[in-house]
Length: 239
Length: 239
Image (cartoon, rainbow over all chains, first blue to last red; front, side, top):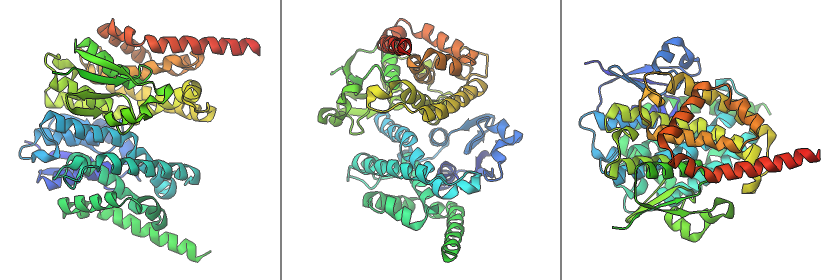
């Protein structure tokens, strides 16, 4: 049988969620790097894999799939030996986890992505930094964190989303999104994430539950974070 | 056993998808109207149902759930007698349908909602019309329709998404989104939707597959469409 192929860029937050999930569950897979900064997602070869030109994408035998949430659900349901807590077979638990994943799409994800692109990563992707868009995104992100604490992290029966004692694919997706904020200027990051103690604790708990894979897969992000911080220091010392 | 309660506003596109699904499948449910224009989604009573203050939401016995895609999946999996084509039990088919639903969240939905709010419905929701935001949204929406035709409607083996011969919950969700464009000025609607023949045919096919429920649930939208068209004519005749 051919190995599962996982097409990713470790700078993409949903790519990292899929990689950590596969590693944490001992899945035998091949990681294929698609360098977004070099535009490799637009190559004709990659469009054969995913005509929507996005990572992550997988090929499992002859089956091709895109969209990280769907990939996580698919792997959790079809690969043997994945612990049930990641995506429970019980219909109600599964529905609640799906509900968090759907919420992610229209709240945390667009807010975080807009802030990161407009105040840090834009230039690397050929886009300008836009302070006004960044300010709007920061408001949205604060509101998303408020709802995250008030709704999804409300129950104190367990450490993870929905009061669960072990992480689900929703914990992994949302935390990888939040980790992208590492590339922001420290002041901005503290301003937007600092007030949310429950969110910070939960990020820590998820790291511990998925290490050493979590930190390994985030090394690329930490390197970019260091480079951006050094560039900011140089530009401040010139002022 | 208590009846399924479905909290909706028929002016909300995901609310309509859930209603049509329930009616098309003969589910015995109670429709509870939450009037968004009157702010009923922000009432303390409704926040007991959905603290995220959004419709649709359901209560099934003691179980509460929000997010239309998750609601559709949940009902398809837990209520007896729902034909398999809506949300197939086969893992690969299910994964592809999930992938379309995830794509919807970050493409068709934000583009369509932004265009509709900024060029038609804004004032009814207490928001100004914003022509620049509407123009950006129109570009995004065209790009979403292109991808819809090139990727999800590519296969001609069946009339519906992914080349399927019968509709899935993804068909229903996406078509209800597109129906929201009915409230736009006819010129704008034709400009953005007109060029996409496959999309128009597929909307027609989905209507036929789900009537009379489809048209019944869309009556409220058609009434608002008529009122807005009449108001536009009056304001043009004054110029």
